Each structure stands twice: as structure tokens, then as C-alpha cells.
Image 1 (cartoon, rainbow, N blue to C red):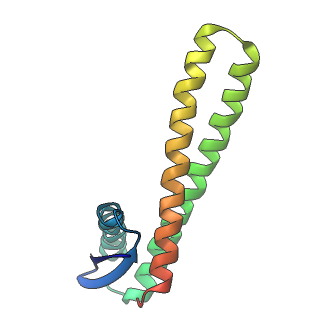
Image 2 (tube, rainbow, N blue to C red):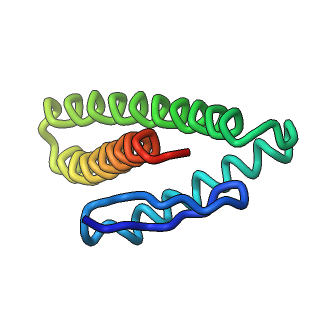
Length: 121
């Protein structure tokens, strides 16, 4: 099992991850820190726990929106597939790739949230 040190709001946290996922988790940590920093700029230093909770809610909202987008893309895929034209098939392939990428990103965010929840914050 891999381990990554991420910095959030000026504090270092050790986070466990699957071997080979260290860079991905570090990048997610940087993104989370950006959200926390943005919120700290808006509301001030109200404590790590509150800032982390607010950032998690912002990320959960973004995830929900991504899932909605993914569902809409999947609906369009079904519509394209039922139309049967070659251009539609090419559009379906491109849309499927985008939907898969969104789903994969959503799963990574959920996994990181679970790992952060299990780590001492």
C-alpha cells in the first residue's frame, strides 16, 4: 500500500492509497487544497474541520453535477445509437469516452473522500 503526504491549509496529512496511485492522490490533494484555500479567502480561517467540510460539500456538489452530466451524455448515447447513422456512431464513441472519463473521475473523488475520512484530519 502506498502513502502520500498532502498539504491542506498549511498542514501535512499522510494518506494511504493503492500502489501506483500516489501521483493521482497527490494531485487530488492539491485540488482539495485549492478549494480549501479559496474558501479560507472567502470566509477566513474558521478552523480546519469547518473549512474541510465546506470544501467537501463544494466537491460533492461538483461530483453531483458531473453525474448529472454523465447521465445526460448516456441518454444522448442511447439516442444516437438508436438513430443508427455512421456520424451518430462516431459521436457515440466520443461521448462514451467522455462519459467514462467523468465516471472514472467521480470514482476517484469518492475514493479520496473515503480515504480522507479514514485518515486523521
